[in-house]
Length: 310
Image (tube, rainbow, N blue to C red; front, top):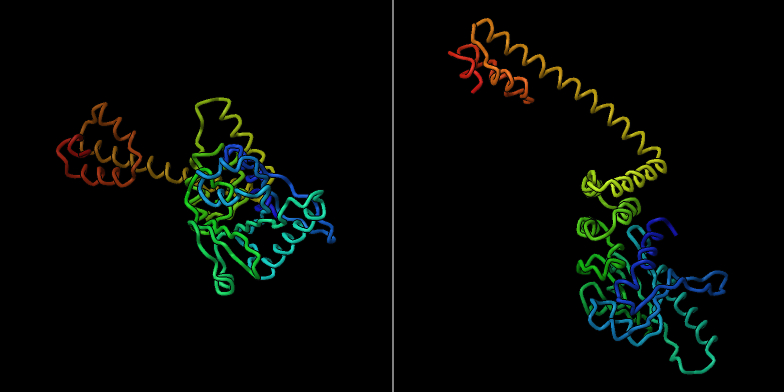
């Protein structure tokens, strides 16, 4: 499992109980002995009645003791082989539960939620998934129904954050900008590190983390950034190079401004146009090269220093 998958799984681990008001918790699934057959996780249902008012797919968990979850993030395969493997893992878990039952009370149908950015074209053609809510589809291959959650189509709701991390492309960028103000900075930085957002959105979100007024918050942010930079030497090198380039350009710009101010003052002096302290301060405070050049041209014919600086 790659880092993006681990982040998505961690989000389910940390968020499920809170998002559902305690109705569902996450559990790492037991290993099923078919060499190694193990899903991404299990949702354990504790309060089915609490799920009725939540946004789908949460209410679909009512009537079950657990739901098997398979996460397919941007870049993961969602072809028929991947789905068949998920169904195999579901069937193996179902068999495991049947064999472990002391009484025949459990009906023996393990629910499966397969979470991905979108519904693949082949799945729509082969099984005609039935959409029952935004981003939520029932799929029935060979009579064995499972739920497909298309994260790109889900509404932006706090209670769906664990599903929304599976978004891709523009939908992922939209989610990133929306969720940034709703989660702690540590979580947002992890999201930026692991999920494949566009460079523009990533930079936009990083700029939001300006210097904090609270010293403790600022110290925590600085430490997080230090850890991320230590883990990414290439990023460190790029930032250093960018800093050097900015420093060189800043020096060039300041030199041009200094030269323009001096040229303006020389013209005024030669024409014996006396500068008041206020006008001289305006020249020194001006940081726009075009403005200084315009004042210089006006000083050649102006009747006074004040007129030149209009």
